[in-house]
Structure formats: structure tokens, C-alpha cells
Image (cartoon, rainbow, N blue to C red; front, side, top):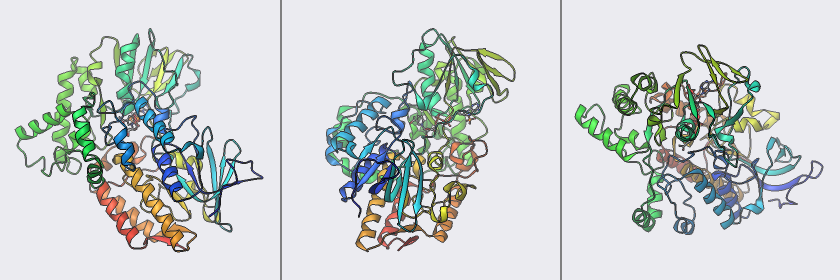
Length: 542
Ligand code: N01
């Protein structure tokens, strides 16, 4: 395999690597480590000025993971997992970023990572069997393999509101938050969006601002995080059996230690359901959805959970009109990502917080002094866009790799993404996606899914090398069959009933396809293991 000829070079003198990796978040960092251990020459590019991916960019107040810290961390190094100590049950963004920087230093990853370098294009040269990767800084790198580790939630988007550029105050997007933070003291702040980011940021913005106006289009189901300092005894006990615990979560439905009931909500009495929901509500976090085994499959079962959650909103929020507006309706719990918050609903009891329904009266215009909806104008000093992402496909299609015969991925995916296993896509040889569409990705603990994909890719490269094979690519028929399976599994659930970013519903014109694989992390892992053990059926190798 080719050796590197330098860190980077100008177009007339491309650098040569075995693998180019795009993105230096959880996925890219592990890919650098794992592939380098195989003796491969790797170059990782990231547009940011630091490592960390999503945890580099999302510095908004309250940014915190909704998977528990001891599970939302790498398992590949027993030494790393023993020496690192988390401070809280749910890790906050600064702590996760510190952890990822520690990993980059501890495993000496930085020497193969080029920051402040956005990959802008990549084309496969069929004659040479090389990917040519171009960056916005003018670098050109050639590599046998291209690993796209850009993350599922990295292409932030602000809806195309008329008058957007006219606003004279400050504007922020939660996923592009200033390094130095923002002081909202004395300011009238408008927040658009009540997904995970908005739900986490709003209580902290409201605690600081003179007045906070929340523009809500869809009320979300939200669960209390009940975050707390990490119990040291719990940490010690888990660390004593950490590897065993990791092996267990790898085969669970969503890659966490969540307790999943094997009982139907409809078999339980109303009193039993109430007791179970209440206990999970008190426990806090996303474990609520594991209360019964049919909450994501049966609408009647789901309705019982939805009504319980609405009753909680009515208990917390004093103004019945506001409580009603905050109460989600019209889609099953879990079909849009359930948010995990701290004091979200209680924030609407503050006299300096106003909730505006922009479902019935949409935002019509951003004006120089604020926001005008169909029925009122709001004067603001700052606007926070918590409006989400062009999820799962956005960052990949921004690169728009070109495969065999110059085929653009954008054209191939014009009716929605198509992959085999969420890892490879026919017509694009030697290109791998980490947690791509068609894999458990965002329906799972991302770190578990990332490690599984990177390990799969590494093992596949070893297989190619051992067998003297140069090229690997998805077989088109295997890809079709996988996509049918992904769609069939999703169709048997309530996931498809929500207008969520899981189906691209938040981006006007984006094809409506349920993108993640919801068959379960453990089920998916076993399928991948079987494929690897049987000489990779579904991959065309030459
Ligand atoms: O983005 P979102 P997010 N007019 O797409 C609204 C992960 N994450 O950044 O629902 C008015 O969920 C939109 O309204 P609607 C997590 O996976 C995790 O919050 O489309 N409103 C919605 O309310 C999460 O799911 C963590 O009707 C408009 C909001 O903007 C994912 O990232 C923390 C609008 C966007 O919500 C994305 O979360 C943060 C318009 N034109 C993020 N357009 C944790 O680990 C959009 N909206 C806890």
C-alpha cells in the first residue's frame, strides 16, 4: 500500500495515503487510531479548528448528551476506560470535548489530522483505483480508500425565512455557537425550534435574558434528565466489569443499558401502566420508552404513554393554555426524537417567557427588529436558531463524491439514500460511510455504532489485503435487498408516522425516506458479523 509523501500538497503534487478520513469526531478519531494500527497511512481532514465533531460545534448553553456518560464513551481501550472519570450521569458538552481531546493526545492522533480543512469534493479514478480528495484549502490527496465520518447531525440548517439577512440584532445557530459563549443579560431573545437543542438551551437562556420568546412549531415529548453527579460507587462497580458490560450493550436494541420490558402496555392494567411510567419518569432519561415492549409498535400502546406525558405537562405548567400548547399531539411518542431536558416545562411558568405557536400562525418574516408571524410582531435583540440539521445525508452530499463513470452521489441518492448496510453504496468503490443511512446510527448509542462500523471497515480492509484484493463495492442487488429490509422493518413500527428529521421531513424538498435501520443494534451487529464470517456476501471484490 502507498506511503504518504507529505502532510498535504497543492493540486500539482497530490499527497498519497492509504485512507482519507473525513471528520474528526468520535468516528474519525477512532478510524485514525484503528486503521493506523493496521499499518495504513491515513490522513484525516476536519473543517473545525479542533477535534470533537458535533461536540466541537454544539456549544450552546445546556448542551449535554442524552446517553449516560459511562456508555457514551469508547470501549476499544480498557486502559482508557479505566483511567477516564466522568463527573456527571449525563456528560455536558465541555466534558465530552475534553474527553475527545484527551483521546487525540493519548493515542497521538493529531499528527494525522489536518484541521481547518473542509473536504469539498472527491472523485474515484477508476484506472488508478484511487480516490482523489479535494479540500477548500486547495489540498489534493489521493488514497485507495475514502472513509466518510462526517456524522449524522453536522450540516446545520437555518430555514429560508424571508428577510433573514435584514435582522439588525445578533443571530446564532445552536450548532455553530461562539467559542466564548454569549451573554444574553438584559436582552430580548427569540428562540426558534423546540427539538433537543432548543429544549436544552431554552431554560438557560431564559434564566439570563430579560425576556425569552419561544417560537414553537411542533410540541415535542420531553423527559426529565435528572442529571446528577456520577455516583462514585456506581462508577467503581461498573469499571470492575466494564468490558463485560460493553459486550452486553453491543447486543442490546439500542446500544445502551436501558431496561427494556418484555411486556405489552396493553396487557397491563391502567394502574400498572401509571406505576411503571411514573417510576421511569422519576428515574429520568430516555429509559421511559423501554417501559413496555410495544410502545414503538402499537398505536394504542403508544397512546397510553403519550397521555401520561401530557398529564405531566399539565402538572408542571400552571397556565392551562400554555400547558395545552406544549402538549404534543398527532404523532406517536418516539417517532420524533424524544428530548431529554432539565427544567424545560417549568421554564414556561416564568413571567419573562412567552410561548408562541408558529404552527397555527407561521413565521412570515424576519424583520430588522425581530420576527413577524402571521398574527403578530415580536421585537427582539437576538435570535437563536435551534432549527436542526440536514440530517444523515446532508454532510455526505455536501462532498458529493463521484464514483464510477463520474456518477454523482447526489444523483444516485436523488430519490433518497441507498446503501448496503449503511456502510457502502453501489457504484462508489472503496468508499465507506460510518453510521450511514440504512444503519442503526441515530436510533442507537452513536459511540457503540461508530466503533462497530470502524471495526467492520478495518476487518474488511484486512480481508482485502490478505486475499490480494484491490477493490470492494456494494453489489447493487444486495443493496436493493438491504433497502427493502430497512424499509420493511421501519414500516412495522410507529417511527414512520412522525414528521421528523429521521425521514427528512424538516428539509423542504428532501425525499421522504426513513433513513435509520430500526431492527436493533444487536440484530444489526450479528448480521454484519455473519457477513464478515462468510467472505462478505453483498460486497463485490476484485
Ligand atoms: O433539531 P430538531 P435539534 N419554523 O430538528 C423547528 C441530536 N441532539 O438540533 O418539529 C419554525 O430536532 C422544528 O420544528 P418541527 C438529537 O438526535 C441531541 O434540536 O420541524 N420552526 C424543531 O422544533 C436531535 O434529535 C442532543 O415542526 C422550525 C426544531 O426547529 C438532533 O440532534 C442535543 C422551522 C428543530 O429540531 C437534532 O436536534 C441536541 C421553521 N421553518 C441535539 N424549521 C442530546 O444528546 C425547523 N423548526 C440531548
